[in-house]
Figure 1 (cartoon, rainbow, N blue to C red):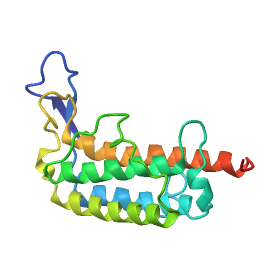
Figure 2 (tube, rainbow, N blue to C red):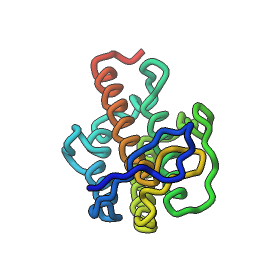
Figure 3 (spheres, one colour):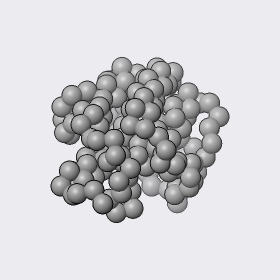
Figure 4 (cartoon, rainbow, N blue to C red):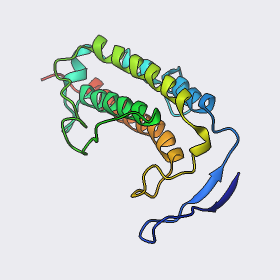
Length: 179
């Protein structure tokens, strides 16, 4: 791994080191999604392993201001958007907190949601094959300080973060009687 200051970064943006690593390839990032969907990844339980035992009704039972269905809808929305970004295809800008950021999944079934997660996993695997890995250290946009590599890493981290929330909600619901 080597590091050097990113060239052309405006003074108001943080200076991030440029990191090159020979293993940052399509296969590396595709493997991250396969692990995320596999059994017993390093961080706990994978997507299907986490969701399969949750009763259908619990997908729509709120804990605080969120449901498992809402979190899945959010993950699916960002997976689709990320897949378009990685393929350099036109994509809508998602405003944080908007209906595009948190789509209405209140009428979706557990089977629908599991199917969408499987579909968007495949979408991402395909999109990751289309990434130009020679541009990992280029800024994702002139107005942003982070690089393409951060978007790739962030997409995986985003799913892990929300999967943790799903598991936490499921744990609370297991120990709480339905109303």
